[in-house]
Length: 214
Image (tube, rainbow, N blue to C red; front, side, top):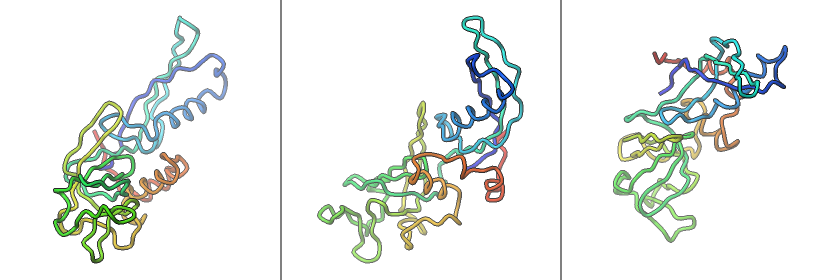
């Protein structure tokens, strides 16, 4: 689920960056370090705007200055029971490994419909019902999150496709009209991260109805 959340970041600057453009440099540093970051609890998708940039505090050790920045960001916090679109990264006898944007989701074999069987002798290996459903590397899936395991700098989840309206996407691709997780996934796969030019504030505001996380 997506939230608009206020967060705080402390940035330390070398004296060589002091000057009239220090604010611009702080904002650029904030975007570079925060967008795409996993806190272990949620993913920071996009920095929306600055709430406050505090006055720099000079550190006595080496002349560097420390700035405390309060900003608002779009975050994604996966929840149990949430339905997301994902891309299959690999298939194994034990189950299916997928990526829903930055979130790694494993679908165990027991959470795959019984009519979809493991076929190791095909190229590439796949799960199939020998009709119109084929799950292999690169397949688009709609799945439901069953559990989330947060870590220090990552979040992993387990999921299921053993319910109505879940499973392979008949079109073979994830359409950007669906949800922002779908768009995150497409851009993450193409660029290996969260491109700030895609999450331009105006675009995000037009495409999302946000819930404030207080």
